[in-house]
Structures are given as structure tokens and as C-alpha cells.
Length: 302
Image (cartoon, rainbow, N blue to C red):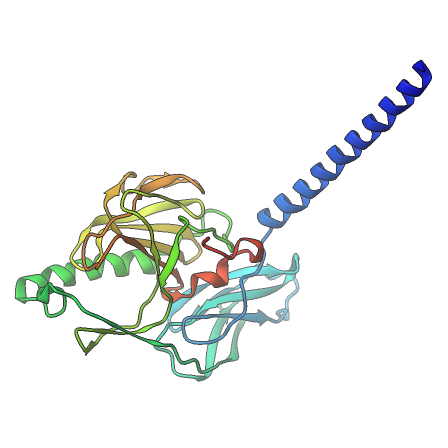
């Protein structure tokens, strides 16, 4: 009987060890996949991302090139972990017309390239919104002056370039909730046409915490006319995210945050018809669909 019990215990111990080893292996696979530069989804449409391969230069010792699209520096990554070939992760502005475009590549002052790529057509749906506060649709003179100052602050944050840390190519949801307004909608306020919706609206109860989707530095913070309490996070290499309509901001301008850190609370400040988070993601100063930077297994806000 003692031998039988010992054999059963050995089988249980072997199974336990096998499960532990399997769990460790799966964990390593997952963490390595997250840590490595997984390329975003290639979707070369207005509001999308074009992954443009950069051929090897004539000089094999040449270092990583710089890439520019419409005057803005673009994130460049080693392709397939091969330092001899690169890919430009190019954000495409929402108002881009379909057609052929040029990416300017600079290896050295003497080694330059121009690479052509195509932007495909895409039609986004319309959304009609009624705003009771008429100034939020047709601001007065003083409002317009304030809006102008705030716009310049946001432009500076969107156009900042910081390559002091490794590039981030995958981000996660800042909170759970229903998508109440998808990206790219053609918007009409009180029947008047306005700019397309350059982010996602995630509906949630007022006071729900919002988390940083990746490591970042806080480059803009304040109470804006349209956006209400707003934060902008710079994740480096032209990747910037913006959070609007907050009820509270919990981090300081100029500080750094880590992925998953609470940065503020959901609210309805500014031009909002109810509590929600407006979340914008920008690459090389082009607002893009956030889904394109989501890992496939986490591509849900639910």
C-alpha cells in the first residue's frame, strides 16, 4: 500500500511540475511577444497606418535611417530583427486623399531615398449631435482666442519628437467601456459640418479611473474649451495619446507615467453630452485608429 501511494504521489508531482513548466513557457512567450517590437496593423487609408519597407542602402555600415512624411519625422523600426532592413511606421492623416505619396528617407547627407506608397480610399459614417450650449458650436470672439491658444498647445504636444527611449508599437485600452462613437465619423453639430472624429469615445460612469496605455511623459495638461480637462501623453518616436472630458487629473505636467498607472477620472467636461473618455492616438502628428496599435488578443474594450 505504501508503494502504491508513493507512485500516485509521484504521478501527481510530475503532472504538477509539467503544468508549472508549461505555465512558465507560456508566460515567457507572452512577455517576449509584448516586449519585442510587434508591428502595428498595416492599413494604408486616411486615419490608418502604412508600413513602408526601407531597402538596404549601398553602404552596409550605414546606421538606422530617418524617415519623413509630409514634413513630419516617422517612427522607424528594424524589420524582422534584421538591422540591415527597416520599416517606417507611417501615420496617415484623416483628411488625406487617396493616391500615391512619397516617404523621404535619409541615411546620411549623401545617402537619400524617396519611396512611393499608396493610400487607399475609405468612407466613414456620419454622426449628427445636438449641443444645447450654442457657444460650444459657434464660439464668441473671446472663446475663439482661447481656442486658438489651446490649439497651439496641442499642436506642440502632437508634433514633439522624443527618441530617448525604445519605440512603443503596442498599447492597451485606458479603461473598459462601450465604444459610443467610433473613430473617423463625419461629424455634424446642430446640423453644421465639423472636423471628423479623430479618436474613440469610450462610455463609462463618471469617476471611473483611466490608465496610461503605455509608458509616457505628460506633455500637456489643462482645462480646454472643447476638450474639457485634458491630458496628453508622449510615448516617444512620434506616438502621442490624448485624453479628454476628464472629471479629474491625477498626474502632473512634465512627469512620467508607466503602463497601467492611473492618470485621471472619466468625466463630462468641455463639449460633452454625457460622461465618457475621448481617446485620440497620434503617429507623426496624424490621428489614427487606435485599434491598429492593439495586440490582437486584447483588441476589445469589453
